[in-house]
Image (cartoon, rainbow, N blue to C red; front, side):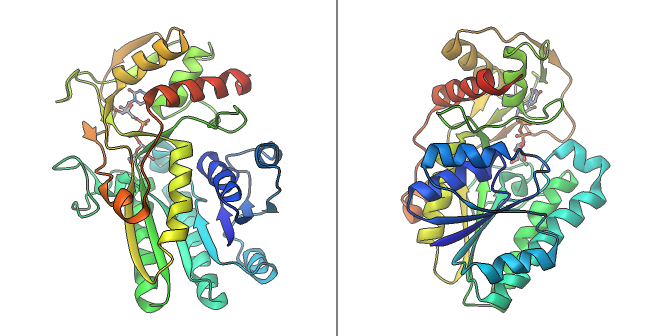
Length: 333
Ligand code: UFG
C-alpha cells in the first residue's frame, strides 16, 4: 500500500514509518518539523534502507496538502500530526483547536475528493476521561476531557465518525493509545521533547542524563498500591506495529475503534525503579503535589486488538526503560 503518514517525523510517526516500510509499504510523509527534526528522515533511511517521500509543510495548508494527494496515488492515511502537550493546550486553546481540528478536516475533505478510503487516526485513552472501571474496553463510557488537547482528540474522533457515516465506503480507525514510551532499539529514533518535558519518561530520561536535577512525583496519595499514578506504558515500536496491523486489517468500511495498550498498569515509582534497575543509574525524585487533571489509574483491556488485529504488545517495561535510556544517552546533549 501507499500510505501517507502525517506527522511522520514525530516520536510516534517516525516509528510508524519504519514499521510500515519494513512491512513492505511505500511511505509518504508530511511534517512541518514543529516538534521534530529533519535528521529523522535520514535515520529512517539508515534503519530501513529505504527513503520516504517527504513534504515539509503543515497539513493545514490545504493547497499544498492537495498537491500531495494529486502527486501520490494514496491507499491509506495514518494521521498522527497534531499538537499534543496537555499543559500548553491550556494556555493556547485557539492554536490547539485550530491546528488539530482543521488539519483533520483538511485530510477528511481530501480523502473524500480523491477517494482515499482508509484512515487510521492517532487517538488517545484521554477520551475515556476519569475511568469508572479499569481495564478500559472500547465500549467503556467516554468521559469528560480535562484540557483542550484531550478535547481535540475527542472532537477529531467525532468528526471522523461523522465523515464515515456520510461516506459509507470509508474505513475510519480510531486507535486509542495508552502511554507510549521507549525508543527504536537502534537509538536513532525516540522522544526528545523541546524544553522541560511534561511526560514522565522523558522527564526520567533528562534526570538520568543529568540535565534536570530531580524528578517530581505528582502525588503519592492516590488510591493505588503505592499511592502514585498507575498507567499502561506501551513500547512505541509495539504501538507502531499496531498501526501496520490496523491499516491492513481494518481496511473494510466502517468505524473501527481499538485500544493500543499492554493491559498492565505500572505506578510512577515502579517505572522509576525499573529504569534504575535496568540501566543501573540513579534517578533522584521528590514527592510533590498532585498535578491538576491527573487520574489515579488508567490501563487498557487489549482483547479487541488481539482478536481483531492479531496484535499484542510484545515488549515489556524493561525493554521500554532500556531503549529509552539508550536513545537519551545518544541524543540528549
Ligand atoms: N508524572 C509525574 N511526574 C512527572 C510527569 C508525570 O509524577 O514529571 C506522573 C503523572 O502524575 C502520571 C504519570 O506520571 O501519574 C504519567 O504521566 P504522563 O504525563 O507521562 O502521562 P499521562 O498519563 O498524564 O498522559 C498521557 C499522554 C496524554 C494522554 C494521556 C491519557 O501524555 O497525551 O496519557 O491518555 F492524553
